[in-house]
Image (cartoon, one colour):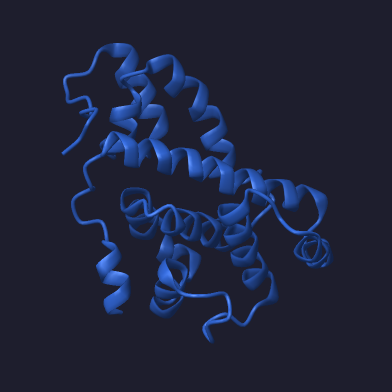
Length: 188
């Protein structure tokens, strides 16, 4: 049960405008955004950063971005945000069921990972999650495959989704109807 209930329509005009700006045209706002809208100044401020993290200016590909996000959400045990990203982006990112299962509870050493950059991204997310740092050896390996802009994007993308996961979990945002559950990945 949600600790901070999501706003329900009808919305005030300022909330409606903000929620519309955060969603594709004609798509109703997800529960997380309706929860965040209880603090509208925060929602306005964070939507600019969120557009960068999910936008074309991010230096990672959509697939790389989703690997970082799904692994971060799984490591944070945030079924809500993991499920939303899986539902909306996994097919576009070309992630296989084995890769989704691996991102959810497996290892970068799982046989479904053959691209060195993808293995590296998973290792970086795990390191950031476990120690809030990337060790020197891993950082040197990352520098061989990622430029400085990409290194910064990976670390901040991971941190951004830690923050999103913390808020979604602590507020107990209700799971989206039809979104995958962790058990779905384990069954795959």
